[in-house]
Structure formats: structure tokens, C-alpha cells
Image (cartoon, rainbow, N blue to C red):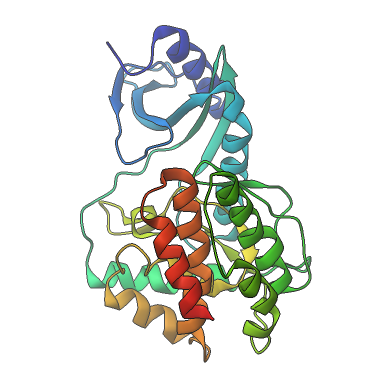
Length: 302
């Protein structure tokens, strides 16, 4: 059985035809791995209706109908990064609902394996260029989105420590508390945030927002690309910190990035504070030992 039933496949093909302005018919489907939240499928077929036809491939993610807002936010985040013309992302094409399923369609990018030092240097250069894109509205974004499957609040805020307390750590702590988690020093940490960040005044940079190693890759043509964003405007160090959380990127990436955007004093301490957000989120998503890890990180910061 193909990954997409005909009930889903034909309306999605029709939507792609509408978006691209060229007739598209799905001829091949292939399940794509790498995610634990959505069903992911590469769909290929002829476009244009001419003979011989050009063959194109599109990337489709499927989830429940009530997840449409998640896909719409992903579409908008990809578009914001795409329009910055700094680093490659899959161009988003559209979202929709079919029956009890929602979906997003985007450009298919053929990813390679590994990548050369030159490609990772380009990744560092281009991510730094993306972080040079700023917002005059402050920290946040024009809409909320998700970090994995968790709601992420992005209401605009003029003060960075306030944003990190009220839009990032606070909601994660509350969700974890509802799941029975105990953070003995939570209140102490939240009260200390203005002091911990008082000497750090970042500009609101365009962020990927979920930049672990699995969301950065090199295409088969050697071009750096980032995927699955949780976009907002914030401290650029949060993106850089997350690249170190679940396995560092190659050294050439960091060297190139810091040649454009040198790290400020205190980054090593702030890195723990920023990655705490993701560790608590992992507890909220997966449970397990992430709670102990989060409490150790709070102790480190304080």
C-alpha cells in the first residue's frame, strides 16, 4: 500500500497543480524517515502535461486535521527564512486539510551524507548572515508556533530576559509541573534571570529556533540547508547553543560563524540557560531522564 491513500494523494496532487500552475500527477511515493511527529512522504511525477514530461518531486508532511496551525506556522517560518536570502531552506508551497488529515507541501531537497569542510564553512557563514537579519518590533514573532509538538509562545517583547522568562522557560516549567515534575530551584532561577542576563543585550536576530544537528544538513550538491524551523526573533546565541546540545556540528562551522559573529563573553554560561528550554521541552515530550538533566542544568546556572 502506498504511504498516501488515493483519498489523500489526489487532492494533494491537485493542490500542487494549483500552486505551481502546472498539472501534476503523483506517479511514485516514498516514505521519508527522520521525524517522530509527522508522516513524511516524497511524491514524484510528471508536471506540465507536455510530452516528454518534466519529473518533479515534492516533500509532503501529514498529521491530524487539528495540527493544521502547526503546519501553517512552519510554512510561515520557512517563508521568512527563505525571503531573507541568506541560507537555503525548502521553499514552502502550501498547507491544507483533507478529511481528518492536515498536510504541508514544500520543495524536495536531495540531502547528501556528511559534507565537506567547505560546505560546513558555508553553513557557518550563511547562518551568521541569517542572524544579521533583525526585527524592529523586538523579541518574538507575529504568530505562535511549535517546538517539536509543543506550543511555543512568540508574543513580542522589548526585553530579552523577560521574553526568555515569560515566553520560553515559564510555559515549559508549567507544562512539566502539570506532568508531575519537581524543580526545587525553579523560582530561584526565574527570579535570577534579569541578573543572569543583565550584561547581555542582544539584537533580535532571525532564528531557526530548533537548530539541533538533525535539522542542519548538506545537499547532494554540497549546499548547506536547514529544515523544520521553530522561527522567531531572539538572541542568536540560542541557535548556536542548540547546535552543541545533541552532538556538535563540525569545527569548520563554528570557525566560520565566529569569524562573522564573534561570541560575547559569558556565552558558555548562557548556553546552559538557553539549552535548558529544550531539555525541559524534551521532558514534556518524552519524559525519562530529562528531568534530572534539567535540574542539574539549573544548579549549574545558579
